[in-house]
Every structure is written in C-alpha cells, then in structure tokens.
Image (cartoon, rainbow, N blue to C red; front, side):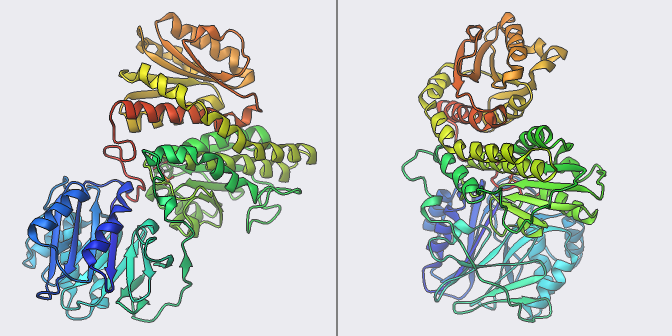
Length: 605
Ligand code: F6R
C-alpha cells in the first residue's frame, strides 16, 4: 500500500526521502513523488511520476532536484484514479501540500463543495480533495485548518502536510492508517512504517487518533486538537537494519522462507516454560469457560486461523468459527458474552481486521490479537496481544508470518485445552516439548529447496493447478494455493479432497497438475482414493505425505515429510509449498517480492 515519509534536518532532503521511500518499496506502489521546500526561492517544489522510484530519480535529475532540507515523500498504490503522473502524490492547494495514505469515502461530495468555492482539480484522487479542503480552512493557523478539515472527512487517512508559509515544519495526523513521528538528533521524521527511519534513528512516537504531530529540525511535539501538548512514551524500534535487507538472498521472500526456523524459535522459546505456556500479560485462567471462539483475519493470516480452528477444536473441544474479516464485519455476527474473538494479522493494520476487532469490542466480547508489528493499531486496541516474533516481513507474499502464526495457534490451543481441563499435565508437557522441536523440523524441510526448484522446472508452464487435502491438509492447501497464485499468476484453487467429486473434478484434464497434501495419518487413505480419482482423469499429481506411506506410487512426484504428530504437519508441509510457489514465480520471470496489483499492508477496505 502507499508509503509516507517526511524529513526535516540538515541533510539533503531529497536524498533522505528517496532513501526512506526505497525502504518502503516492498509495500507495493505504482507511482512516487516528493515535495520539498527549495532553498533557492523558498517555494515548495513538487516532483512526481508514474512508475518506480528509479523513474522519480530520473525525473528529479531532469527537472532539477530541490536543494532544501525539509519535505515529504510518497509511494502511491492506486485507489482513486489510475497510476499516472497527475494522480501521483503529493497534491497541493494554494498554500498547502500533502501526502496521504488511506481512502476518503466522502471525497465526491467534498469535491463538489470545494468546486463551488472556486477550487479546480487536476487529478482523479481523493487526496487532492483533502489538500484543497485543508487549504480552504487554512487562515494562518495550521492546527485549526487540520482540525476543521478532518472533521469533514469520512474514511481513513494518514497525512503528511506542508504549509507553504511555514518552511520549517511538517505536520502529520492519522486515523485508521498507521503513522509514526521519529526523533533523531538535529533531525526528525514522519513515516508510515518503521523500516523507513531505521537507517537514521530507532526512537519514535506512535501518533494516535485526534493528535497532530508537529515536526521541526530540533523539536518534535504532539498536540491535541486544542493545541495542548500530549505526553507519550518514546518507543524504540527493535528491528535491525539488516533484518530489512536481503542479506545475499536474491529475494526477500526466499530470505524470509529461510528465516522460519529462527522466527518460530523466537516465538515459542521464551513462552514455553517447564510449567506451562506464558503469554505476557495474559493471566492464568483467561481462557477458562469460553463458549465459542471466533478467529477473524484476511488472506494468509486467515489460513493460519483455519489451522487454529482444527487444532483448538480437536484439543480443547470448543467450537471455533473462522471468518474472513471483510465478511465478518458486515454480516451482523452473533457473538455471545462468553465468546472470545481472536484477530490474526501480520501487519496489525489491515483495515478489515481492525474493523472486525472494533466490532467485537463494541459487542462486548473479549479480544485477543496475534500480531507481528509491535505497537500496530490491532495490537494496541485488542484487550490482549500475543506478538509473533518474526521480525520484519518485507516480501508481499507472507511466509514466515504464517509459520509464527501457526506456532501461536499450537500454544494457544494447548493453553485453552489445559485451562478447560481437556488435557492433563502430562499431555500438556508433551505438547510443549513437541512445539519446541518444530524449528529443527522446519530446518529439515528447507532441504527440499532443490527438489522444489526442479518441480518448478517441470510445472512452470501450467495454466491451472489444483491443491487438494483433507482436514489440516486442506487448511494448508489453501495457503499453498494462495502463495502460488499471488506470485506466479498461475490460476490455482484449493479444494477439500472429498469435495472434488461434487463438481470440480470436471475441470481435471490430461496433464493438469494437482498438488495433493496427505500428511494426516487418519485421512491418508481417503485422500489417496481422491488422488487415484484425479489420476484416472489424467492429472499429474505432486504428493506431500509422511515418510514411509504405502501406495504412493499412484503419484507422479513425491515430497516426504518426517513423521511428527498430525497437528504440527501444516508447519512442515507449508515449507515445500512456499518454495514451490517461489521457484514457479522465479521460473516465470515474475517480480517475486512485489507481485502485480498487491500491497503488503492493506489499510483500505
Ligand atoms: C498473502 C498475504 C496476505 C495477508 C493479508 C492479511 O501472502 O500476505 O493475504 O496475509 O493481507 O495481512 P495481515 O496479516 O497484515 O493482516
């Protein structure tokens, strides 16, 4: 999604903005721009273009890079209006220039009102409307202008704002879209994401709603709408710069796939103790007497929730519903007083997941967030948070975040089962010991890299690929299928293996690849029958199953997985599925880390 940066200090502003925007490139974007107070004439110079940052650099070279030390920059992921020079940010009014993340829902009526007041518009964006709205209210008092403008806006926003007659300040405000104000030494920053500032400082403030950050070279203040100082704790980014770099890997995605043993270890090792599973700040007995659990999330995080459903239900015997957040929020869900709502989100900023959380809170249920980004909106607003310690996930396609979400699901299932008397001390201790062995097994699965590469050589020209499985294998098939389609652009569907015969099998034709996941002992024979059914109709089957299974010569290709208890199998089978998707995309020449049309953090509905 869009990225925002802002800088004021002694350095060349254009260099800092371009550098910081480069560290947000992973979010996905289609145009970019900067606005900088030019030292030569004191005016705000705006340079923007469709395309990547390299195109912006070229344009800056050709029109002349502004020489100032204060400015704002943006990478845009198109929502209102196609990617083009005119729709790229920043956008300006007479005295105001802004960059914006989010969506202004009532932009059309605001635009009409502003047109009647004499404003002209040169872009199709909602952002230009916001720029002109702030401009309209600006009579020399920035706080009043911002306050009045946002009171008219419906939707989500993070704004970085320059008032043309105040060349030594940047203003920033947000609602439902992340934004931080970062503190350096003789320089200060705003940014939509932490990686943008890591090279310069680790100290930052989280800007909350109804607060305005005012940033000058030597001062960083946060005030409320009446101009009163807001005192808030300075946060420290724990991510390292190298965590946000490729470290010799050709792509972030491959690096992140290989980081999974460590990410899982970091997520489980400090929580699993001799006596139990300790989630910071969540007291013993918190999960006792729950009647129903709702897991709500989007995309890959929702797939982790599907795994969570199977294992919580099987261990704790408590019903679990899994919902896609964008459906949950609008379907008038039924939530009982003893229900528990779990939101899973890597970024902690996904608009629909955040809205689902707020809905749950409004309806009075307890809420728990499973989140990777510390201090993100979902983490802050939930009653409890369990952080997944994956470190920054840069590739758009989620890999290590999924693995750590699974790790939290195992721990959570164990703790819920134990607190509700469904497992005894001995089984609980065994479960904890087994969870601690997962990083080593995941490392073993990474050795399938070469096999997956070869399989990609064989299958990369496929136009359609089916994934099938039953139970937990079905849940992981959904993730394997999503991974493949999002980065390789091959059409792919995941089906519950037993459901094929009810319609979909008519699509199986000679040579059609079918990836069959059959790693659950009690379901293996059932899935094997389904494999035979598709084979009989010409499918080319790639089978993932436990070592030593019989009858697997029915498959064309086989990847074997160590025999560990069935509930943990998704943590293992997902690894070759990720590697397979990765090499398929590489083989097809796709932009693996930045697949078309996708953005890392989806902060709009
Ligand atoms: C797929 C992917 C997305 C995200 C989804 C939710 O690889 O990354 O499907 O899982 O957009 O994002 P978070 O977890 O940040 O809420």
